[in-house]
Image 1 (cartoon, rainbow, N blue to C red):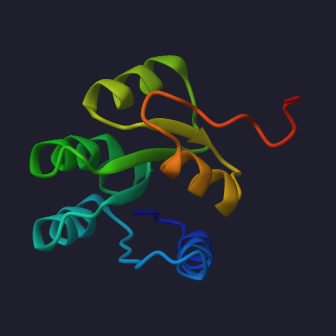
Image 2 (image 1 turned 135 degrees about the vertical axis):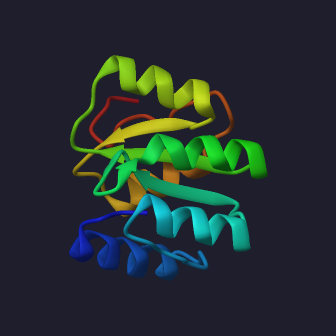
Length: 122
């Protein structure tokens, strides 16, 4: 769920190319409708949406399907919000800009781990 149309479109295409079935939305309301129809295995959710907080979607996913691997994607990162996202069930919090590969690596990382940054020494 991302309210930037161009980013949502590019990310959707990139995720489809990586084998994911994509359902997208631009608002909390659209996201809630989609997850009530069929809660996803994975979710990429923008923190700040025009009609509210992406954290509301993380919370709804945690109630409907606790095994969903959700990440918050945002340009407005801060520690208190990252902590809130984790408490609500998000597996990670990624600052924009992020590549599709970074997002996939985070979604697929074993629970409780975070993949190294692309430029981090191994």
